[in-house]
Image 1 (tube, rainbow, N blue to C red):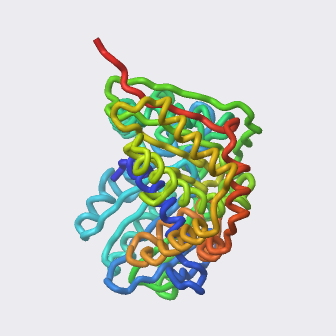
Image 2 (image 1 turned 90 degrees about the vertical axis):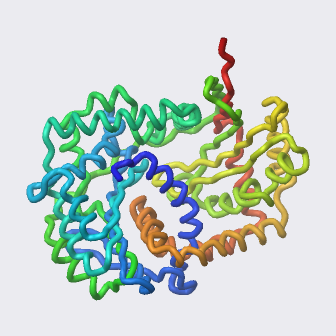
Image 3 (image 1 turned 30 degrees about the vertical axis):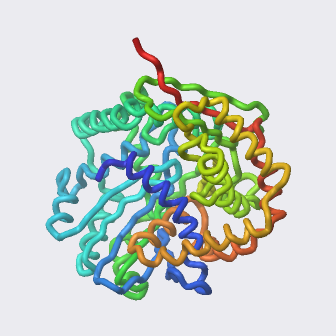
Amino acid sequence: MKDASTTKRAFLALAILALCLVSGLNTAARAGVFNPETFTLANGMRVVVVGNHRVPVVTHMVWYGVGSADEGPGESGIAHFLEHLMFKGTKKRQPGEFSKILARNGGRENAFTSTDYTAYFQTVAVDRLEMVMEMEADRMTNLRLTEQSVATEKAVVLEERRSRTDNNPASILREQVNAALFLNYPYRRPVIGWAHEIEALSLKNVMAFYKKWYAPGNAILVVAGDITAAKLKPLAEKYYGRIPAPPPTARVRPAEPPQSASRRLVYKDARVRQPTWSRTYLAPSYLTGETGHAYALEVLADIFGAGATSRLYRSLVVENKIAVSAGSYYAPDARGPGRFSLYASPQPGVGMGALEKAMEAELTKILTQGVSASEVARARKRLRAQAVYARDSLQGGARVLGAALAIGMTAEDVETWPDRIGAVTVEEVNAAAKAVLKEGRSVTALLLPKKTG
């Protein structure tokens, strides 16, 4: 529940799929996937309602537009640490009481932290929604912590880091890749934080961060399920609307400078059972950089490495049988720069040099020969089709819309995603590939077994 790191990673994966789903999400009322209703409270808190009336259940989410990229120098991990501490009690409730009340009422909850946002959610019967809103609004402003609770939870977070990062060779390498890929942008820091900086966090640090960022003007309420805006609005005004609106907090993030030198990382660990090769490129996102390439890059990622029919999988796994897996991944849903990644794992007996040579050959084909009209048409169809499945999930719309608004996008951006994907041309995909897949703005990483004895 307070397990933000795992939930965060799972969520980020969902968010990308989602922003595909999402994309499909509320394709404006025209496509009619989610058809969200929206309004804003007088204190600046935005509210989104996604109706789904098949069962009398709702998912209630509060998103704060703050993540690890907003942390101050020497405070890496504080956003995630605060997420844990939000369960430690308020003026009204003792530590853990929130969760106990929710459990007694048949509810489920969780929370997660990313580079750009922190979110808390509960799924309950619709007749318990008001109870949840009152409790969540209470901890938006009335969090109460002690030195003891901070020390206790710090030990929990440090153990989480040890078990999920320090004991996982792939996670160790991932941290190093991010630190190398971003020369200046704060995405170079791990969401969970560096251990030595987590250890130095204090009650004073945490409360200052809480008071700075946890305010209605920096929050989005998303409720999905058996509810309408007409029914939700009086409750939102009653519980969230009465919270005073402090002056807005200025978001200060350094810009990423131009990159011209490729970087190469090799990490060897005796715990590695399957070697991997990857290359990650600095890329535009929906909001940062050459944003006009974002939708074309989504199509390119689908053609190049999404699934068993992609170019990389067919060539490396099926036809040449030099890899057991291969693919590509693009992450455009960020307030800051995005990432375009390629990856592959070799078949037993195949050297990393041969695997890299094969990957480079496929890259050369994309850059010199481009993609075809039929490939683009199929990719657009696949991506748009994913939106159809979004309406089967009670949480899907809440998560996608919440993530989009938390990074600075709008519900309309989400709604028009399928149209924008559908409008991508062959020329745009080829131009995006040439603009982004440049070795000088990339990090190539090898994860290898380390011989012992």
